[in-house]
Image 1 (cartoon, rainbow, N blue to C red):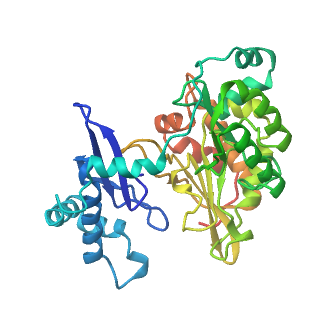
Image 2 (image 1 turned 45 degrees about the vertical axis):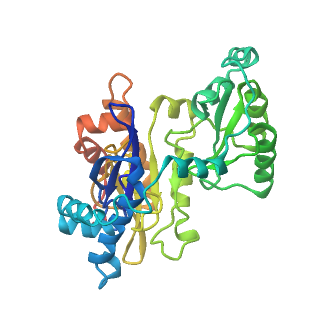
Length: 380
């Protein structure tokens, strides 16, 4: 949310009423910026009119003379978030309480087109599910990483990992997708969701069906229990498919997956996000990966810049941009670089810390020292 031009964060205030925080000026690409909160505790009824006021201010003052600077983030930075907020508030006075103001009646009308699924009334626990957890060593690990509780009792949300070894992150064959469609019909009330992390989600699975589903998912290669772990890599198509890319992304992702092919070790590392972009447009969101990799062109050759400390986060103030650790690396070096970063984390973590917690505690220098030790000078 903080890394978008316009962000909306819904929450309940102290009185239990739904209010909105409006953020503006975020973005990645060549000029990564964390967005700023320009309005707090806005009653939800004014969401549309306030967003329209933001767009009006942007439309009036943005850089029409330069397409590379015609983004809200450039305008907010130039004016300052405070001045931008003042401009929006002034513009909003012409829209406030106008025809676009939301009403409960209108929300109820639209909600009818998004009726909830017809769920069975089930107990929150299931004896057969608990029995399989005790009897099969592989099933509990998959449940731990790939299954999440659902708001309806007796159901769960299942993430199908599209991060197999030797397969580009997010890729699937036609046969695999046919199988996913069958699982959706049989187990998930006909619903499939795509995730930002390039995986697929079956959101409405009965707990009593989880073991049966797991066996079928395993057969198709979608049961890798690595959701949120180092090998759950986000990668853009890179130079193999994209004409904008400066470097390939997929071979780097595959090399890192191969290096960290011991799932027990990857599980012990805990949550680590690794994002790869093939160019500065940042389609792989490398800026907010705990470990970020950016493909760069150096004298016609493909090199890779590494950032550490990025975090997507949750909530209105949780995102952080990664910091570049130093000169870029060749493709052949990248697996060793990531290994050295992880080794530094392992040697310095305490009390089961996540990677990002250890990084925030010790800073970037220990990682830099480890990565560049005994390395020949490379391109800047």
